[in-house]
Amino acid sequence: MKIFKTKEELQTHLCAHRQVDGKVALVPTMGALHQGHLALIQEAQQVAQLVVCSIFVNPTQFNDPKDLEKYPRPIENDIALLNAAGCDVLFMPSVEEMYPADDKPWHIDLGNLDSIWEGEKRPGHFQGVTQIVYKLFNLVEPDIACFGQKDFQQVMVIQRLVDSKKMPIRILICPTVRSAKGLALSSRNSRLSDEGKIKALCLYQALSYIKDHIGQQSVAEVKEAANKILIAAAEVTVEYLAICESRSLEEVSTVEPSNSYVALVVAWIEGVRLIDNMILS
Image 1 (tube, rainbow, N blue to C red):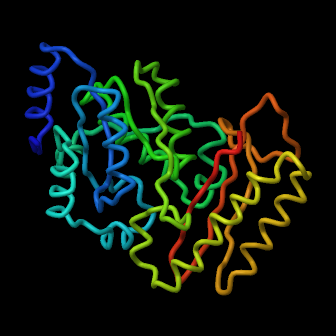
Image 2 (image 1 turned 60 degrees about the vertical axis):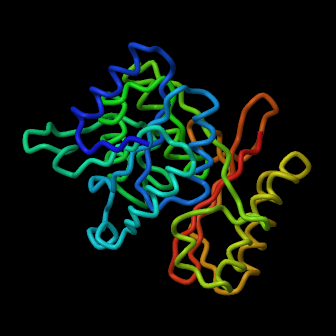
């Protein structure tokens, strides 16, 4: 695996690759890699000849400077994992490399995606996400970009970015990687105790109930039953649970067979904010 820390080095390497031909896939990450990230690498290897993984803890998407400061950065372990996974290129820039002093202000119209659910809870977060992803897309010029389903709203935001900027990039949504019992893998899970990880299974159980019953009961009935599953788990605080139309993420009160839907959930356990979702149709 080749490691680059500057845009110039990376672009020189990618230019040489394109002369040989073959598709390029990008897997953007903030590091602290786990099996979910490695699954993205594996998915990328199935659809492209060259896989580029970026590790960059992006300051513009953090609302709280303390969160940015304490974000895990186990870079040696990350490099070892990517090497073992057969990743071709790792791009590991500094903040100064990605945000030079003459950088222009950034804003993109994301419609309601910027103001509902995660957009509401974390103001400015998706502007920061799109800012760095747009930079990476322009730098790497990938044919395909791979993102995990677990951050579903973020994927819809990035799809909006690609559509808005008319970028010829296919966004590949890769299924959430879960533990044997259903817990969505996340770097935040490492902060949970063993007991907390057991409690956190209620998120998967609630989402599974919704998926299994959405066509048999009304949306209100399904949501009420799923909420009861979450509340029944001791010391779990539900931030939101919603059944939404997939692209707009507008909450719905009825479902139509011709449309696609997703269930979203966020809950706090042991002071850790956990996010999960399940595609319903």
